[in-house]
Every structure is written in C-alpha cells, then in structure tokens.
Image 1 (tube, helix red, strand yellow):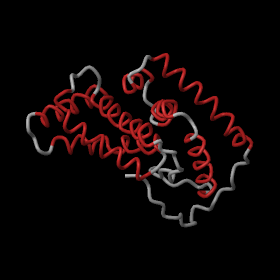
Image 2 (cartoon, rainbow, N blue to C red; image 1 turned 90 degrees about the horizontal axis):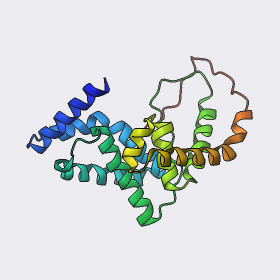
Image 3 (cartoon, helix red, strand yellow; image 1 turned 90 degrees about the vertical axis):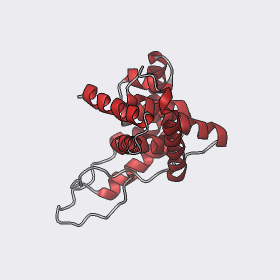
Image 4 (tube, rainbow, N blue to C red; image 1 turned 180 degrees about the vertical axis):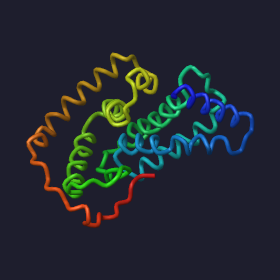
Length: 201
C-alpha cells in the first residue's frame, strides 16, 4: 500500500516539475494533515507552526526538481517541514507554548475536559524537550513513523534517533509519572452534547 501511495506521490511531484499547475496542490492536500501535526507538535505554537509549514511548502514547491527519489516523497516532505521548524527554533529561539489538542477522532464517552487537561499536560511536557528530541518523538511516537524513516527525515543515524527518543521518553516519564495514578474520569452519558472544539486542519 505504501508503495502504491509513494508511486502516486512521485507521479504528482514529477508532474509538478513538468509544469502541471495542479499537481503540487494535490500532493499537499494528500499529506497536509500529517505535515501540519508535525509542525504544530514540534513548535507548540499555532502561528509559528503555520508560518513554518508555509515556509516549508514554498521551499518544497521551489526545490521539487532537486528530489532524487532516494527516499519516499512523504519522507522528503516531512524532512522539509521539520527543517523549517528547527530553523525557526534556532533562529528565533522560539519557546514553545501549549497548543490546543488535536481533535480529529470520533467523540468518546469519557470526560472531554479531563482528556483535554491530560493532553495539555503532555503538550507542556513535550515542549520542555530539546528541539531535536521533540522532533524525533513527534515523528516516532505521535506520527508513528518507522525509525528508519525518521532517521532519513532528520538526516541522522538510526542509533541517534533511538537515543533521542529514549532520552526524551525518560524526561517525559519524570514529568508525567503522576498521570499513571490519575483515576479514570467518570463516563459521560452519550446523550450529553459535546463541546465543539476546533481541530487542526
């Protein structure tokens, strides 16, 4: 399935390079949710993430002809986005704030406020990590990317990714250990209307 998806991505990128005015837009729409999530989680600020994603997509648009096919197109796109995020962190010394949690999934019967508070605590802890550790954890643990792909995205050896994730998880465990002992919130009757919350596009 991944091979089919990548073949489609490569075809779209090649069409863009050849002058197809719609191909790049189609490619971006296909991956924009994941790219946005990576930018948001890495920077921890919606405005900074939006600016970084815009910078990254503009860079990808202009440099598409340099894509050599050594990695999957989605890996290449993630690399461009993560680099744009890390550049902003290093250049502006962005101190991550806490974004609103993404709410892309179906509603659940549990206490939405309790879930939201837990998500905010996790985001706060994630924001304290060094940018490189945060990027590795976002890609591996949040986005579920294989370690090999993350190594390609960040341009470092697989062992470095494993090390960054290990150190990042250890730091998060110290900060979030209290969540393990938190009682499960009471279920809310399904008939209770849920609060409308805006998720990331």
